[in-house]
Image 1: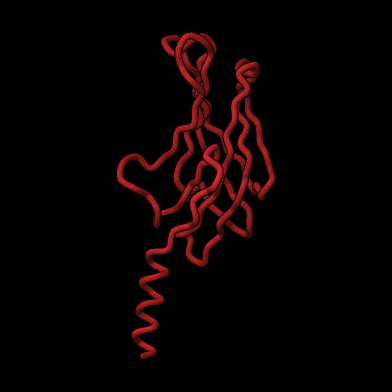
Image 2: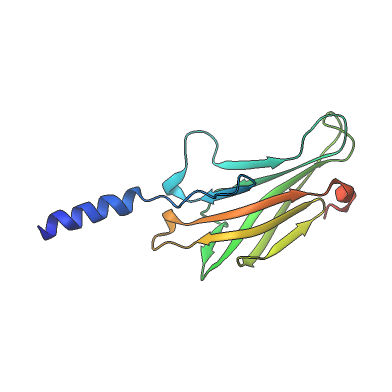
Length: 143
């Protein structure tokens, strides 16, 4: 009986996934537990075309992106197209450390808000919910 319960508990913990955000404007970065097929990063961007555009590429949790002590460290890339999609773009690698729920960071046209941190027992189940917004009036303020 005890061995069976321990086995079921292990299966549950191994298959656990953090709850998805309720807000459709929030993206969730996860660790190894929840990566689907395909590329292990998220792209959040403005509409591209005739005018300026911006994009943030967020990488999965693990390595430099990690949760510790209720805070998250993020490394990500910011791309900006000052003219249009066909024009030259600038790529900037960025790092923000010790971000807690409610913290916001802005770099040029991109603002990232930490909405929720899921700090699990095992790192593979960690997740962070982020809201990424853009202000294209600040397209020339790229770090």
